[in-house]
Length: 277
Image (cartoon, rainbow, N blue to C red):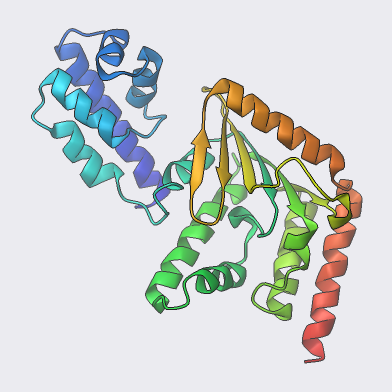
C-alpha cells in the first residue's frame, strides 16, 4: 500500500472510531481508559495521525461491541506494508515529521540511498531472494526517499560515520555514484550531512543507528535499530536521552564544509579505482 493510501486508511479508521464512540456515548478519555490507552491517544487515532495497533483495535471492538469491525478494518486496510514489521510505523511517521535527525554508523540511511546502493544492501542480506523481492524492497526505499523532494519536506540532519562513507557497497563505481548523490543533495540544501571520523573513536551511539523525529502536533519520537530488529521509542524520558546522545554525536562530527569535502574526495577515489579495474 502506498504511503498516501496508508494515511487514508488511518483517517478511515479514525472517522469510524469517532462515529462508534459517540454513538456509545463515550468521551475519548472514557474509551481510552477502557482500552488501556490515554484519551489523547484515542484522539490521535480519530484524527488519523497515529497508526492503530491490532491489540487496541481488538479491545475497541470488545468495549464498543462492534462485532470485530475494527480488527477487520485493521487487517484489510492498515496491516499492509512493504517494510519489516518493526519498521512499518517508522516509515509512516517519517512522512509526517517536520524534522528528522539520523545517525548512520555503517550504512547510508535509506532516505539517501540510490537504487543501486539499496539493491546491493538488499542482496547482501538476502542472497537467495528472488529478483521480484529485491525490486520490491528497492522500490519501497525509493518511495520513502520521495518525501525529501516534496515542498513540505522535513528538515533533515544526518551524521554519517566515516565507515559508511568508505565502505564500497555495490562496488567502486556504484559507491562513487552514491556519494555523488549525497553531495548533490547537500548542495541542493535538501539535507545537512556531517561525518563522524573514525579517529574520534568511541561515540554516544555505539550499539546501532539512531533516528529522531519531530512533528507539528505530537510529541517527538526516537527509533533505534540493529541488524534484525528496531525499536520505536515514545517515552519522553527515553526520547530525551536519545536527543542527548545525538547532541554528543553532533559535537564530535566534522563541520558541514569539511564533511562535504571528505564525501566528494571519497567519491573521486572510488571513481578512480573503478576506472582502473
